[in-house]
Length: 368
Length: 171
Image (tube, rainbow over all chains, first blue to last red; front, side):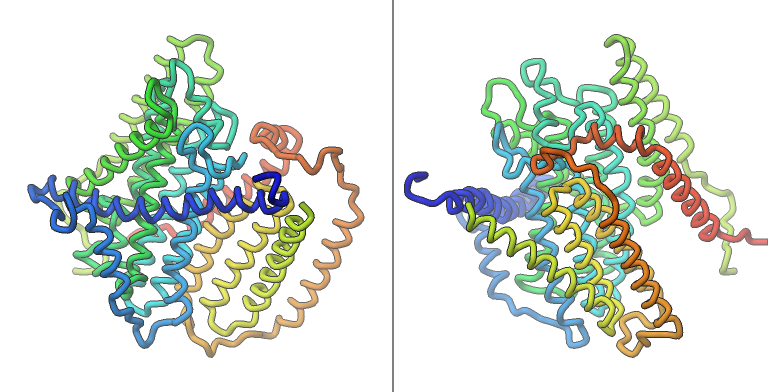
């Protein structure tokens, strides 16, 4: 090929191949995640789930896709046409872009940016803009309420999420997702960060915040069906609704993939090929997300905010110091014991401090 | 490779034109919400310009802080105003001329400073890629004083916001 084509065509070709791979992987992942979720939640609720279209319902996502495409697209008369139209398109862009820095296997990162982790966090933080556009553009009170909730939640959970990643950056000394995976290569591919005290805590915090960032249950207040219809996408139908859905599922995939990369060793692992390890770890995390949805009831707004600001945030700050100590500690036994001790003590202390109290008599500030 | 450079160059100019256009729209559009969205587009465009200058870290921080956090606050603030989404809100007040003058003065000042300063240019500037370690070293060693001053400022605003938002005790 190199002999036939000019250099610049080769460069563009190599770019196009990775773009095409991602543009294909994202939607296909989303389609089958919907099926997986319906199946798993179905089994958890003692149902069977979709099983009519194709063997084990395997063609159900295609049928859903056809249904979504042929549905009528309804735009409310008072809606802001530009914002209402652009929001579902813009919400897919960051969800697809973050696939670029995820290391799917040995040498299988689409773009090995040296600021890869920061890229992921920065790009996924722009999702709030699209949600704002959707909620405001619909001119619907439920949309607006859902949008406000969603943005408040995403802004709050972004803080502990970013801070929980700091120990990993501290230990590896790099923001590149590839370097982070390579740093977990010892012990025959099993020296994952989750096997250290700070890594375990950071993983739990990161994963919880990730679930909250995707607006998934038990943090699904922005879409709480029983309170505000469907939140910011109340006024969307057909393919536009499908795009919101797609962004949400792709986000839950990428968050699980990033959690696996940062704490579960990414594609590192013995015997099996690297990409298989990566997808196994990611799908285990996705399964846990679905499991959450099948078992946990929804939080209240104040509980949600308290968890982020009063519990997770202080814990991540302590965790950063513990990781620093780990880096400089003289020998293994001292650092394992000390950091595990400090972390469990602060966990216990924060839990005690956060325990709500029930007043004996209710006091109403504004109503008699 | 020359064709590729031409394509990239064209992309960068298109990006700059997009940013300028969005900036003009941000100050001329009547609808406050649309103005805020145009402003967000400007910030993303600036991040793209940083990226084209090989300042990856700066570009990412620009998106994270400005597009992710500051824009959210701006839109929250707009949503709390009374004339939100109203096309009849006035676009200028008695300070318009003064603000325009100040903008011109600061433009001249900044451009003079950036042209007159002798920037330390390295030999291999084309292949320069800042590592996290170097950045941390610069922030916590060479530039530790401005760094700390900024953090004190941020803490002050944080405490101020808490005091303003604090509930008054019921007497």
